[in-house]
Length: 343
Image 1 (tube, rainbow, N blue to C red):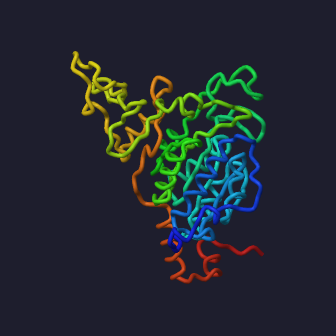
Image 2 (image 1 turned 135 degrees about the vertical axis):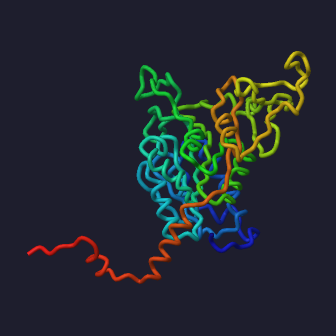
Image 3 (image 1 turned 60 degrees about the vertical axis):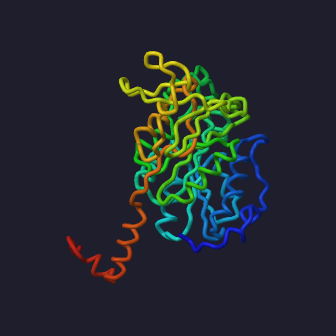
């Protein structure tokens, strides 16, 4: 990691560029940018020791607006560039901005291998369930039946759930947040900064031009009771008065919703002891939370899964250092093994 400094010496302005921010008025990206710039001084890392990498899409303008080093790369290949940056200079703090189209369509293969390798890169996936930059085609996360310019009769595709995808390919950190929820978003960003390995944060983000209201039922204040904020070692309670909670049915092994005080199991009142306690180290619980069908269940937000494990960086760096100590001759290397002379 980079040399750390006193966070009090950094401010939000240290991470703002002189570029005009060019997203559509009302776009959720503005909120994400503001929250990222606001929280980054807390990490005590100089802007010169931070790199933002992006692919193609509305979200991928992010490096222009962060006064750090940055790469605006090619469609879907942000994970490959980010891994290369981190492997070449492990001391850098590497962050990546991508979208549901950029990261899960043409970039799905790169994203998959970055997540399983667990190289120390912090990933933000802006999920608006649409291709915004190219003016409104359906994306890998668009719902079945979605009518767009490229699916005039409705999408026939089953959508990808980004958090489930990340869990399925072996990510060591998977979280969800919302663009308009500063508290929840910044808490996840703090956790990402402290996690060593690939951290994946799916951010529900509204595209008010081509897919307005996609998450309105839980994104706006009126839908706050449909959010379930998960916290390690705390019961999974939600609702306006936190009287509803999740239980893992011991017979069906499926999640079900209980209301505290209402009768269950033959008439006894449900109590907090019946509610499932979140364990962010339990991948099974993380999958169940990620796959809860909305609106029958709430949307799970926060850190769904976090397990420290070996990163790709360490053995890679060790191999490079071992090779340097051997001081191999390039000529000897080229002439070793099966060689022949052409006359």
